[in-house]
Length: 218
Image 1 (cartoon, rainbow, N blue to C red):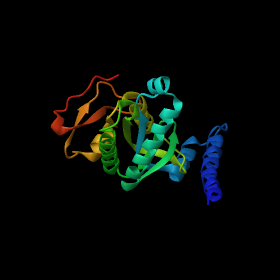
Image 2: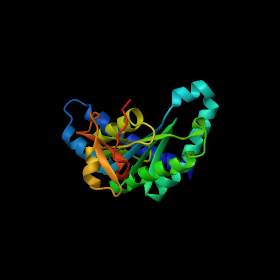
Image 3: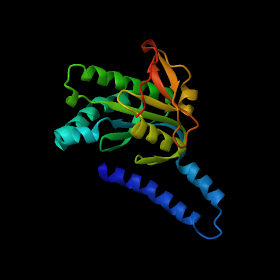
Image 4: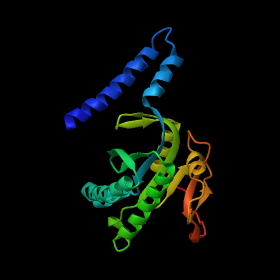
């Protein structure tokens, strides 16, 4: 089964590479090739990027093995949540993972449940053992290459939000995600001061009952 899966992923990548090479040839009909690429790999997805907070600080203070333990904990806690909300985890990279959802509303619900799950998990733990997560979400047309990767403007924006902007407990979304989901029960959107490249605006999703107080961005 693993061998068969690797062939499927390789076939997708090989087909894309072949079309890109054709596109580079002198006199190539780039518009026609682009249409073929989008027919093969294009679709509308909601993409999720996550990141664990405090990597450098925890590694320096407690060692890499301790942080690897927290990465393992996070995977065990969060992967089932993604699955329950019909998401597909495409890859884990260090302390981050990339997942895609057909439904932006289910992606947002998954992100909020992930934060609730971790809040309960962390409640009685020492700070160095807590799993602190930031989440970024984007939605729109993108190219999905097998089960390995996705490409698009909203992918870039979600990556920036999840891996660079989001802090512990944050769920940050692009304007496309906010427009697609409308109102979220028990939560409010707070516009961020700056939008990442690839998005027209970005928002933090906050609990309505908390008064919507937003902490200072790092």
